[in-house]
Length: 478
Image (cartoon, rainbow, N blue to C red; front, side, top):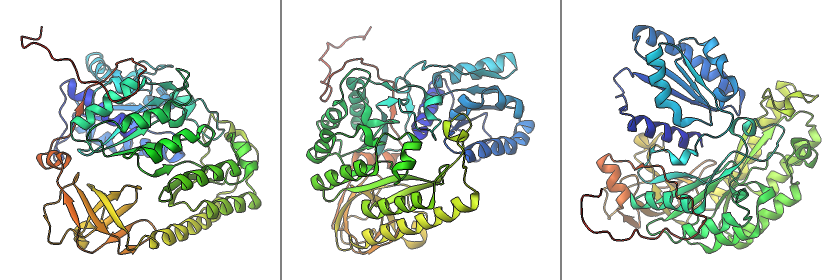
């Protein structure tokens, strides 16, 4: 979500006449788009601001802006701690950035604007997309849940849903630009439809994405177990371009801790969803989020988490040590755990999950896979003379680009190959490619072109691919 918000900020700045600074030039404007989910985000922001202060002193015209969740949380505190910051804006007024920069220049003083409710849905703003082949599409912002560890609802507000026609129009616009893959985004993506009273809206939206020509892969993140319905599983299984990949946060395997977290499901409910997903899609890759060291977590609670992890057989897990966030109910709970206890449990959990991931990945050796060639996914690709891509189930595969077929492989192209080795966090395919398909996305990448989408706001609660615009007579267009 933060990456996509940054694309919106870039799009607005470009529309306002700004040009992205070259790497070897000092920028006139630096924008920090911040997160507040974990404490280290605070430390990183103020550390980065401190390091930037000498550069601004050397270039007095430089402007620094801070936006996003930390800005929404800290507000004027940012300017107090870093008085060389020029603009502070929150999660509800991304669209104000160009105006605030201009106002700060004119008034020669810091501008702080934090709205308490959404000014305009972010997707009505233009976006300068970072990828030629993969795009983010928000279906909602905000969250109606009250998880005791999470500060997001306080900073992004209650859930606001886009109309299906708006979402599909943006997906169609990306597909028209050659984008092959979209990821539907929501803080609680499968609660989509709550604002217009359709609890089956998300499954319908997935099916409608299947009708969009040129769109080859559809993903979504992140669903909440409370709102996960059978119709979504059916839509995933029956819609050819919806990937058999599910990222669904568990957070804890202890029912007692889940209750304290105010997560409205228990471990049996969670595992039952996974069972249904695998029954419908045996090849599904399932990933999760886990928190270690929630206040009051006992060794018994932690062992329950290890048990659920072993039973769930996650492809991978994003594992976090509990981060105390001021303003959340959990921050006031007794029995905050010592750092050394949390660290020890974290290391044990990571070891169990790594073993599980490795076992599952080794089981894929010999399997034929279709890869969407990616850019920047393999840090050692130059040394190993490999390229990298994502399989349809989301797994990262490093592959050898040789063979008898066309060797001019670009990010955005599609290749087929066979897995030769499994590692805990990736797969390797060192055999010859069996197929390579050049794509429009690959052409755009080669040309250095990235999609630039205008904001869409149709306001129509309809499903299905958007209809083609009516033909018009040629003329001046006035």
